[in-house]
Image (cartoon, rainbow, N blue to C red; front, top):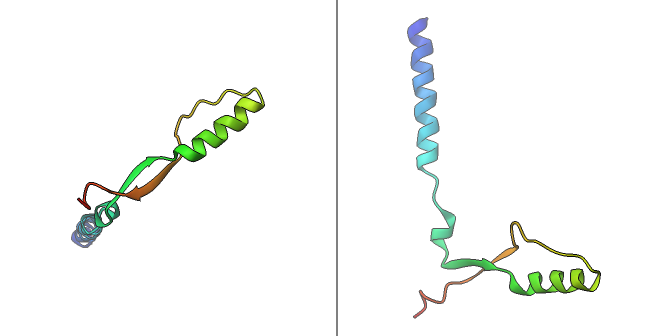
Length: 72
């Protein structure tokens, strides 16, 4: 019975590692670039400034844009 448990653990580990190896980076499939969403940031900061609130972005909002380097 010990051999069966060991073989089961090894088989599950191999299946798990195989699943991780099969994952692809989706950002590599699409020619996009992630940049800060400047328009949204400006809008929020403008509204905050009107209300006397100070804004500090820890994780600024981002958007995907078409990568212009690959089109040239």
